[in-house]
Length: 389
Image 1: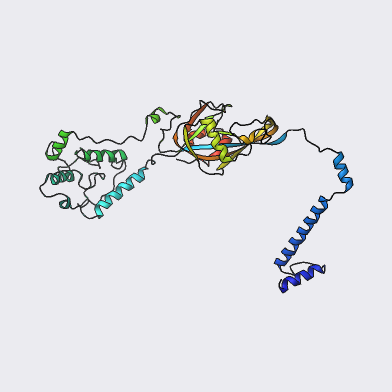
Image 2 (image 1 turned 90 degrees about the vertical axis):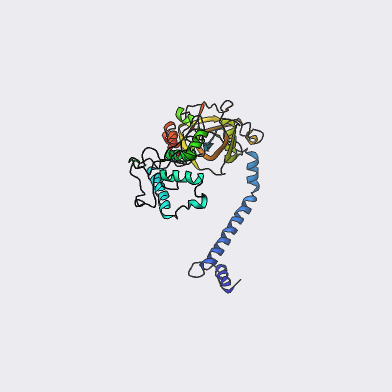
Protein backbone atom coordinates (compact mmCIF):
# COMPACT_ATOMS: atom_id res chain seq x y z
CA UNK A 1 0.00 0.00 0.00
CA UNK A 2 1.46 3.33 -1.03
CA UNK A 3 1.37 6.58 0.89
CA UNK A 4 -1.78 7.82 -0.84
CA UNK A 5 -3.72 4.65 -0.01
CA UNK A 6 -2.53 4.81 3.65
CA UNK A 7 -3.81 8.39 3.91
CA UNK A 8 -7.17 7.42 2.46
CA UNK A 9 -7.53 4.49 4.87
CA UNK A 10 -6.55 6.75 7.79
CA UNK A 11 -9.34 9.18 6.86
CA UNK A 12 -11.83 6.31 6.62
CA UNK A 13 -10.91 4.87 10.06
CA UNK A 14 -11.09 8.28 11.70
CA UNK A 15 -14.73 8.66 10.56
CA UNK A 16 -13.72 11.50 8.31
CA UNK A 17 -15.74 12.58 5.33
CA UNK A 18 -14.86 10.72 2.13
CA UNK A 19 -15.11 12.93 -0.93
CA UNK A 20 -13.21 13.77 -4.06
CA UNK A 21 -11.76 16.76 -2.21
CA UNK A 22 -10.01 14.57 0.39
CA UNK A 23 -8.97 11.44 -1.54
CA UNK A 24 -8.58 10.40 -5.20
CA UNK A 25 -11.33 8.82 -7.25
CA UNK A 26 -9.69 5.35 -7.26
CA UNK A 27 -9.41 5.20 -3.49
CA UNK A 28 -12.94 6.52 -3.08
CA UNK A 29 -14.32 3.75 -5.31
CA UNK A 30 -12.24 1.04 -3.59
CA UNK A 31 -13.28 2.04 -0.08
CA UNK A 32 -16.96 2.42 -0.99
CA UNK A 33 -16.93 -0.99 -2.74
CA UNK A 34 -15.41 -2.64 0.34
CA UNK A 35 -18.03 -1.04 2.58
CA UNK A 36 -20.85 -2.27 0.34
CA UNK A 37 -19.38 -5.77 0.30
CA UNK A 38 -19.05 -5.80 4.08
CA UNK A 39 -22.66 -4.68 4.45
CA UNK A 40 -23.86 -7.42 2.12
CA UNK A 41 -21.87 -10.04 4.05
CA UNK A 42 -23.31 -8.90 7.36
CA UNK A 43 -26.83 -9.05 5.96
CA UNK A 44 -26.26 -12.59 4.70
CA UNK A 45 -24.92 -13.73 8.06
CA UNK A 46 -27.83 -12.20 9.93
CA UNK A 47 -30.33 -13.84 7.59
CA UNK A 48 -28.62 -17.25 7.91
CA UNK A 49 -29.05 -17.23 11.72
CA UNK A 50 -32.75 -16.75 12.33
CA UNK A 51 -34.08 -16.66 15.83
CA UNK A 52 -35.71 -19.62 17.51
CA UNK A 53 -39.06 -17.89 17.36
CA UNK A 54 -38.85 -17.43 13.60
CA UNK A 55 -37.79 -21.08 13.15
CA UNK A 56 -40.81 -22.24 15.11
CA UNK A 57 -43.10 -20.01 13.01
CA UNK A 58 -41.65 -21.38 9.79
CA UNK A 59 -42.08 -24.93 11.01
CA UNK A 60 -45.70 -24.46 11.94
CA UNK A 61 -46.80 -22.58 8.80
CA UNK A 62 -46.66 -24.48 5.47
CA UNK A 63 -45.32 -22.60 2.40
CA UNK A 64 -47.97 -20.70 0.48
CA UNK A 65 -48.55 -21.95 -3.08
CA UNK A 66 -50.47 -20.20 -5.85
CA UNK A 67 -53.24 -22.15 -7.53
CA UNK A 68 -53.55 -19.68 -10.44
CA UNK A 69 -51.88 -20.62 -13.74
CA UNK A 70 -48.54 -19.08 -14.61
CA UNK A 71 -48.67 -15.92 -16.69
CA UNK A 72 -46.32 -15.56 -19.64
CA UNK A 73 -46.01 -15.01 -23.39
CA UNK A 74 -45.97 -17.87 -25.85
CA UNK A 75 -42.36 -18.28 -27.00
CA UNK A 76 -42.04 -19.50 -30.61
CA UNK A 77 -39.13 -20.28 -32.91
CA UNK A 78 -39.59 -19.75 -36.65
CA UNK A 79 -37.27 -20.94 -39.42
CA UNK A 80 -36.77 -18.59 -42.38
CA UNK A 81 -35.76 -21.22 -44.94
CA UNK A 82 -34.57 -19.74 -48.24
CA UNK A 83 -33.23 -20.93 -51.57
CA UNK A 84 -30.38 -18.70 -52.83
CA UNK A 85 -30.28 -17.42 -56.43
CA UNK A 86 -28.92 -19.85 -59.00
CA UNK A 87 -28.38 -17.25 -61.74
CA UNK A 88 -27.07 -13.72 -61.81
CA UNK A 89 -29.70 -11.03 -62.14
CA UNK A 90 -30.65 -9.53 -65.49
CA UNK A 91 -28.65 -6.49 -66.54
CA UNK A 92 -30.25 -3.09 -66.83
CA UNK A 93 -30.31 -1.27 -70.17
CA UNK A 94 -27.56 1.05 -68.97
CA UNK A 95 -25.33 -1.87 -67.91
CA UNK A 96 -25.82 -3.59 -71.26
CA UNK A 97 -24.84 -0.46 -73.20
CA UNK A 98 -21.89 0.15 -70.87
CA UNK A 99 -20.44 -3.34 -71.28
CA UNK A 100 -20.78 -3.17 -75.06
CA UNK A 101 -19.06 0.22 -75.04
CA UNK A 102 -16.19 -1.22 -72.98
CA UNK A 103 -15.77 -4.12 -75.41
CA UNK A 104 -15.65 -1.79 -78.41
CA UNK A 105 -13.28 0.56 -76.61
CA UNK A 106 -10.97 -2.37 -75.93
CA UNK A 107 -11.04 -3.30 -79.63
CA UNK A 108 -10.08 0.25 -80.56
CA UNK A 109 -7.32 0.75 -77.98
CA UNK A 110 -5.76 -2.72 -77.97
CA UNK A 111 -3.07 -3.80 -80.41
CA UNK A 112 -4.31 -5.02 -83.81
CA UNK A 113 -4.89 -8.75 -84.11
CA UNK A 114 -1.92 -10.37 -85.85
CA UNK A 115 -3.64 -13.06 -87.88
CA UNK A 116 -0.43 -14.30 -89.58
CA UNK A 117 0.79 -15.39 -86.14
CA UNK A 118 -2.17 -17.78 -85.96
CA UNK A 119 -2.98 -18.48 -89.62
CA UNK A 120 -0.47 -19.12 -92.36
CA UNK A 121 -1.09 -17.03 -95.44
CA UNK A 122 -3.07 -18.82 -98.12
CA UNK A 123 -4.36 -21.61 -95.88
CA UNK A 124 -8.08 -22.45 -95.41
CA UNK A 125 -7.85 -21.04 -91.89
CA UNK A 126 -6.66 -17.70 -93.28
CA UNK A 127 -9.48 -17.68 -95.83
CA UNK A 128 -12.02 -18.42 -93.12
CA UNK A 129 -10.62 -15.55 -91.03
CA UNK A 130 -10.86 -13.13 -93.95
CA UNK A 131 -14.45 -14.15 -94.55
CA UNK A 132 -15.38 -13.52 -90.94
CA UNK A 133 -13.51 -10.24 -90.64
CA UNK A 134 -15.26 -8.89 -93.74
CA UNK A 135 -18.57 -9.56 -92.03
CA UNK A 136 -18.04 -8.35 -88.46
CA UNK A 137 -15.07 -5.99 -89.13
CA UNK A 138 -13.48 -6.80 -85.76
CA UNK A 139 -11.83 -9.86 -84.17
CA UNK A 140 -14.39 -9.84 -81.38
CA UNK A 141 -17.55 -11.82 -82.09
CA UNK A 142 -19.95 -10.06 -79.70
CA UNK A 143 -19.52 -6.36 -80.53
CA UNK A 144 -21.54 -6.27 -83.75
CA UNK A 145 -20.26 -4.77 -87.01
CA UNK A 146 -17.62 -2.40 -85.65
CA UNK A 147 -14.43 -1.37 -87.52
CA UNK A 148 -12.14 -0.28 -84.69
CA UNK A 149 -9.32 1.04 -86.95
CA UNK A 150 -11.41 2.78 -89.59
CA UNK A 151 -12.29 6.47 -89.77
CA UNK A 152 -15.54 5.67 -87.95
CA UNK A 153 -13.78 3.87 -85.09
CA UNK A 154 -14.56 6.71 -82.71
CA UNK A 155 -18.29 5.97 -83.07
CA UNK A 156 -18.29 3.09 -80.59
CA UNK A 157 -21.62 3.84 -78.92
CA UNK A 158 -24.97 2.40 -79.96
CA UNK A 159 -28.26 4.20 -80.36
CA UNK A 160 -31.17 3.98 -77.96
CA UNK A 161 -33.17 0.81 -78.59
CA UNK A 162 -30.29 -1.02 -80.27
CA UNK A 163 -30.38 -4.78 -79.67
CA UNK A 164 -26.68 -5.55 -80.10
CA UNK A 165 -25.97 -5.61 -76.38
CA UNK A 166 -28.91 -7.86 -75.52
CA UNK A 167 -27.69 -11.15 -73.99
CA UNK A 168 -29.90 -13.14 -76.35
CA UNK A 169 -28.32 -11.49 -79.39
CA UNK A 170 -24.80 -11.96 -77.99
CA UNK A 171 -25.41 -15.68 -77.48
CA UNK A 172 -26.91 -15.98 -80.95
CA UNK A 173 -23.85 -14.27 -82.48
CA UNK A 174 -21.45 -16.63 -80.70
CA UNK A 175 -23.44 -19.66 -81.83
CA UNK A 176 -23.60 -18.49 -85.45
CA UNK A 177 -19.85 -17.88 -85.45
CA UNK A 178 -19.19 -21.37 -84.03
CA UNK A 179 -21.40 -22.87 -86.74
CA UNK A 180 -19.52 -21.01 -89.48
CA UNK A 181 -22.36 -18.66 -90.29
CA UNK A 182 -22.03 -14.88 -90.64
CA UNK A 183 -22.48 -13.01 -87.38
CA UNK A 184 -24.09 -9.92 -88.95
CA UNK A 185 -27.17 -10.55 -91.07
CA UNK A 186 -29.09 -8.38 -93.48
CA UNK A 187 -28.56 -5.15 -91.56
CA UNK A 188 -25.85 -3.75 -89.35
CA UNK A 189 -26.42 -3.14 -85.66
CA UNK A 190 -27.22 0.54 -86.29
CA UNK A 191 -30.14 -0.30 -88.54
CA UNK A 192 -28.54 0.78 -91.82
CA UNK A 193 -28.43 -1.57 -94.79
CA UNK A 194 -25.24 -3.53 -95.15
CA UNK A 195 -22.59 -2.58 -97.66
CA UNK A 196 -20.57 -4.86 -99.88
CA UNK A 197 -17.76 -4.88 -97.30
CA UNK A 198 -20.09 -6.21 -94.64
CA UNK A 199 -21.36 -9.08 -96.75
CA UNK A 200 -19.91 -12.40 -95.66
CA UNK A 201 -20.01 -13.78 -99.14
CA UNK A 202 -21.58 -16.94 -100.48
CA UNK A 203 -22.20 -19.26 -97.48
CA UNK A 204 -21.64 -22.24 -99.79
CA UNK A 205 -18.07 -21.18 -100.54
CA UNK A 206 -14.81 -22.50 -99.05
CA UNK A 207 -14.88 -23.37 -95.38
CA UNK A 208 -18.45 -22.17 -94.95
CA UNK A 209 -19.67 -24.68 -97.51
CA UNK A 210 -17.87 -27.53 -95.79
CA UNK A 211 -19.35 -26.60 -92.42
CA UNK A 212 -22.80 -26.24 -93.94
CA UNK A 213 -22.55 -29.69 -95.48
CA UNK A 214 -21.42 -31.14 -92.17
CA UNK A 215 -24.38 -29.44 -90.45
CA UNK A 216 -22.42 -28.15 -87.49
CA UNK A 217 -24.84 -27.67 -84.61
CA UNK A 218 -23.83 -25.98 -81.39
CA UNK A 219 -25.86 -26.69 -78.28
CA UNK A 220 -27.67 -23.57 -77.14
CA UNK A 221 -27.75 -22.57 -73.46
CA UNK A 222 -30.98 -23.09 -71.55
CA UNK A 223 -33.29 -20.09 -71.22
CA UNK A 224 -33.49 -18.13 -68.00
CA UNK A 225 -37.23 -18.74 -67.72
CA UNK A 226 -38.18 -22.31 -66.85
CA UNK A 227 -41.47 -24.18 -67.39
CA UNK A 228 -42.23 -23.50 -63.72
CA UNK A 229 -42.00 -19.77 -64.47
CA UNK A 230 -44.37 -20.10 -67.39
CA UNK A 231 -46.89 -22.05 -65.28
CA UNK A 232 -46.27 -19.88 -62.18
CA UNK A 233 -45.86 -23.02 -60.07
CA UNK A 234 -45.19 -21.56 -56.61
CA UNK A 235 -44.53 -25.01 -55.15
CA UNK A 236 -41.50 -25.51 -57.42
CA UNK A 237 -37.92 -24.55 -56.62
CA UNK A 238 -37.17 -24.23 -60.36
CA UNK A 239 -38.80 -20.81 -60.71
CA UNK A 240 -37.27 -17.35 -60.40
CA UNK A 241 -33.73 -18.71 -60.60
CA UNK A 242 -32.26 -15.22 -60.17
CA UNK A 243 -34.20 -14.49 -56.96
CA UNK A 244 -34.23 -15.70 -53.36
CA UNK A 245 -37.28 -17.85 -52.55
CA UNK A 246 -38.65 -18.34 -49.03
CA UNK A 247 -40.66 -21.27 -47.69
CA UNK A 248 -44.05 -20.30 -46.26
CA UNK A 249 -46.71 -22.65 -44.91
CA UNK A 250 -50.42 -22.16 -44.35
CA UNK A 251 -51.10 -23.15 -40.75
CA UNK A 252 -54.26 -24.62 -39.26
CA UNK A 253 -55.65 -21.10 -38.62
CA UNK A 254 -55.37 -20.34 -42.33
CA UNK A 255 -52.54 -17.82 -41.95
CA UNK A 256 -49.40 -17.84 -44.09
CA UNK A 257 -46.30 -17.90 -41.89
CA UNK A 258 -42.79 -19.23 -41.84
CA UNK A 259 -42.63 -22.72 -40.25
CA UNK A 260 -42.89 -22.17 -36.50
CA UNK A 261 -43.58 -23.95 -33.22
CA UNK A 262 -43.27 -23.48 -29.48
CA UNK A 263 -39.87 -23.79 -27.81
CA UNK A 264 -40.08 -26.85 -25.53
CA UNK A 265 -38.14 -27.77 -22.42
CA UNK A 266 -34.52 -26.68 -22.41
CA UNK A 267 -33.93 -26.59 -26.16
CA UNK A 268 -32.40 -23.45 -27.65
CA UNK A 269 -33.51 -21.60 -30.77
CA UNK A 270 -31.02 -23.42 -33.01
CA UNK A 271 -32.26 -26.84 -31.90
CA UNK A 272 -35.88 -25.73 -32.15
CA UNK A 273 -35.35 -24.51 -35.74
CA UNK A 274 -33.91 -27.85 -36.83
CA UNK A 275 -36.77 -29.74 -35.17
CA UNK A 276 -39.39 -27.47 -36.76
CA UNK A 277 -38.09 -28.16 -40.26
CA UNK A 278 -38.28 -31.91 -39.65
CA UNK A 279 -41.77 -31.87 -38.15
CA UNK A 280 -43.23 -29.39 -40.65
CA UNK A 281 -41.52 -30.01 -44.02
CA UNK A 282 -40.27 -33.58 -43.66
CA UNK A 283 -36.84 -35.13 -43.82
CA UNK A 284 -36.37 -34.95 -47.61
CA UNK A 285 -34.48 -31.65 -47.43
CA UNK A 286 -30.80 -30.95 -46.92
CA UNK A 287 -30.84 -27.75 -44.87
CA UNK A 288 -28.40 -25.66 -42.86
CA UNK A 289 -29.19 -23.35 -39.94
CA UNK A 290 -26.93 -20.33 -40.49
CA UNK A 291 -26.34 -19.08 -36.93
CA UNK A 292 -27.25 -19.55 -33.28
CA UNK A 293 -28.88 -16.15 -32.83
CA UNK A 294 -32.13 -14.86 -34.37
CA UNK A 295 -32.26 -12.37 -37.23
CA UNK A 296 -35.50 -10.77 -36.06
CA UNK A 297 -38.60 -11.17 -33.95
CA UNK A 298 -42.34 -10.62 -34.07
CA UNK A 299 -44.45 -9.79 -31.01
CA UNK A 300 -48.22 -10.02 -30.89
CA UNK A 301 -50.56 -9.42 -27.94
CA UNK A 302 -53.86 -11.28 -27.75
CA UNK A 303 -57.08 -9.35 -27.31
CA UNK A 304 -57.77 -11.46 -24.23
CA UNK A 305 -55.44 -13.90 -22.39
CA UNK A 306 -55.59 -17.52 -23.52
CA UNK A 307 -55.39 -20.43 -21.10
CA UNK A 308 -53.09 -23.10 -22.57
CA UNK A 309 -52.24 -26.58 -21.37
CA UNK A 310 -48.63 -27.44 -22.13
CA UNK A 311 -47.90 -30.79 -23.72
CA UNK A 312 -44.61 -32.55 -24.35
CA UNK A 313 -42.92 -32.86 -27.73
CA UNK A 314 -41.74 -36.30 -28.76
CA UNK A 315 -38.41 -34.97 -30.10
CA UNK A 316 -37.59 -32.89 -27.01
CA UNK A 317 -36.86 -35.13 -23.99
CA UNK A 318 -36.63 -32.17 -21.60
CA UNK A 319 -40.27 -31.26 -22.27
CA UNK A 320 -41.68 -34.36 -20.56
CA UNK A 321 -43.08 -34.25 -17.05
CA UNK A 322 -40.38 -36.49 -15.65
CA UNK A 323 -37.59 -34.23 -16.93
CA UNK A 324 -38.88 -30.66 -16.71
CA UNK A 325 -42.33 -30.79 -15.18
CA UNK A 326 -43.94 -28.78 -18.01
CA UNK A 327 -46.22 -31.46 -19.35
CA UNK A 328 -49.80 -30.99 -18.21
CA UNK A 329 -49.25 -27.62 -16.56
CA UNK A 330 -51.57 -24.70 -17.29
CA UNK A 331 -50.35 -21.32 -18.48
CA UNK A 332 -52.16 -18.07 -19.08
CA UNK A 333 -50.63 -16.54 -22.22
CA UNK A 334 -51.06 -12.88 -23.09
CA UNK A 335 -49.54 -13.09 -26.58
CA UNK A 336 -46.75 -14.61 -28.60
CA UNK A 337 -43.15 -13.69 -29.30
CA UNK A 338 -41.64 -15.25 -32.42
CA UNK A 339 -37.87 -15.36 -32.98
CA UNK A 340 -36.74 -15.97 -36.58
CA UNK A 341 -33.74 -18.16 -37.41
CA UNK A 342 -32.07 -18.04 -40.83
CA UNK A 343 -31.60 -21.28 -42.80
CA UNK A 344 -30.68 -22.40 -46.33
CA UNK A 345 -31.88 -25.34 -48.40
CA UNK A 346 -29.17 -27.17 -50.35
CA UNK A 347 -31.22 -29.94 -51.94
CA UNK A 348 -34.58 -31.67 -51.71
CA UNK A 349 -38.14 -30.39 -51.45
CA UNK A 350 -40.71 -29.74 -48.73
CA UNK A 351 -43.22 -32.52 -48.02
CA UNK A 352 -46.30 -31.93 -45.85
CA UNK A 353 -47.58 -35.49 -46.00
CA UNK A 354 -46.22 -36.16 -42.48
CA UNK A 355 -46.64 -32.67 -41.11
CA UNK A 356 -47.23 -32.63 -37.33
CA UNK A 357 -48.49 -29.04 -37.07
CA UNK A 358 -51.60 -29.47 -39.25
CA UNK A 359 -50.18 -27.18 -41.93
CA UNK A 360 -52.30 -27.22 -45.06
CA UNK A 361 -50.09 -25.94 -47.90
CA UNK A 362 -46.62 -24.63 -48.68
CA UNK A 363 -45.20 -22.19 -51.22
CA UNK A 364 -41.80 -20.90 -52.29
CA UNK A 365 -42.23 -17.13 -52.66
CA UNK A 366 -40.09 -14.10 -53.44
CA UNK A 367 -40.16 -11.03 -51.20
CA UNK A 368 -42.92 -9.16 -53.02
CA UNK A 369 -45.00 -12.34 -53.14
CA UNK A 370 -44.60 -12.84 -49.39
CA UNK A 371 -46.07 -9.40 -48.78
CA UNK A 372 -49.23 -10.33 -50.68
CA UNK A 373 -50.11 -13.37 -48.51
CA UNK A 374 -49.05 -12.49 -44.94
CA UNK A 375 -50.80 -10.09 -42.57
CA UNK A 376 -49.67 -6.47 -42.28
CA UNK A 377 -48.33 -6.70 -38.68
CA UNK A 378 -46.40 -9.84 -39.59
CA UNK A 379 -45.02 -8.20 -42.74
CA UNK A 380 -43.84 -5.12 -40.83
CA UNK A 381 -41.75 -7.43 -38.63
CA UNK A 382 -40.15 -9.52 -41.41
CA UNK A 383 -39.76 -7.18 -44.39
CA UNK A 384 -36.29 -5.97 -43.38
CA UNK A 385 -35.07 -9.56 -42.98
CA UNK A 386 -35.83 -10.51 -46.60
CA UNK A 387 -33.57 -9.62 -49.51
CA UNK A 388 -34.76 -7.72 -52.54
CA UNK A 389 -33.46 -10.30 -54.98
